[in-house]
Length: 75
Image (cartoon, rainbow, N blue to C red; front, side):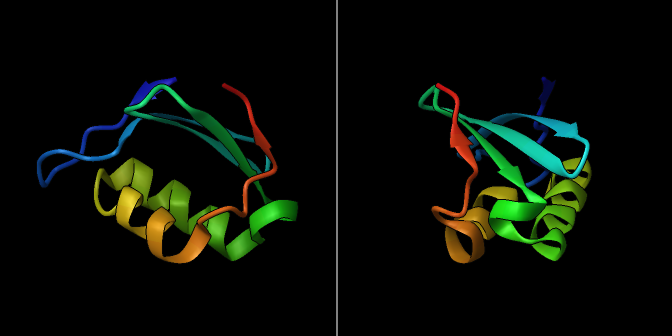
């Protein structure tokens, strides 16, 4: 996993990993979720990847748009 470097201070996301048609997020509470094209939609996952790479607004986006659209809770 790559550390999520949030440019605007603290974030609820600690790390992320980009996969084939997916992104895995590790949150500060230690929980880890897999989001896929199938579970959340292609546009949503691509936006999450973009925000993760930019280090900007990912936790807020997940809270507002994605919520429980994960494919699997890994931890």
